[in-house]
Length: 289
View 1 (cartoon, one colour):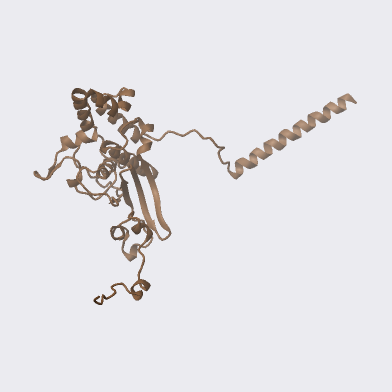
View 2: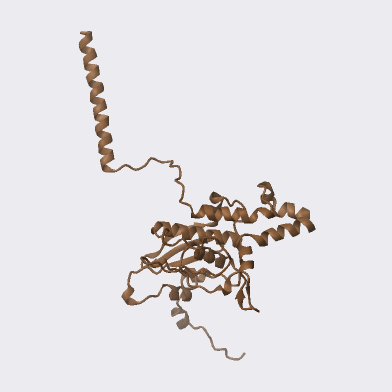
């Protein structure tokens, strides 16, 4: 038998460097992450915000720190039923609504919602927020993770929602739904149709005519809630409007934490009540004697 040289010797294995855990699991592209979080040395400890979009649907504004990533604000697809959208929580339209909700939350948190109203009504055209006189718009870089950046992917629907909501995200319209590679331009009318669920409505009509049984099973949740193909645009307009309104106060199931002054006043009240009750008992005993 011919001599076969060992390719991986003991010295090789002694020097083998294990990759990061999240790289081994295929969860993070560290090269892309390095480009996203790198900044000039004279900007030390200045947050560099990222608009993180995942097609679960998740939208977050985060920034990196030495101790780890910190989430400034987040919005999720499963929150949309609070705003009137109970079905179709994973499509392009829901991604747009989630991005719009996140933009609304961030601007209200930073008290910039009066300066930056965003796009009043979605027209499907490319929109970029203009700087105001007092403060610059909130800027975040798009982070799509390991998603394949195909034209019309849901992560770009979320970024379009955030752009219309008033955030400043560097982007190109080449990845939005309805971008034509042949014409090399965005078709606003078709894009508007995607934003307001026109493609879903068209599919509903086709199924209703061609395969009624499949329509009954495929759109059972829509039928249960009485949503028809003609109602789609009005439904999404109501959702967009409710997302821009001030948030409602949630019912508290635990007691509100009192301040020191409030606790002190409450204690004095209780002591006065006890003292007055003790004084009444003493008077009754004197009367009996």
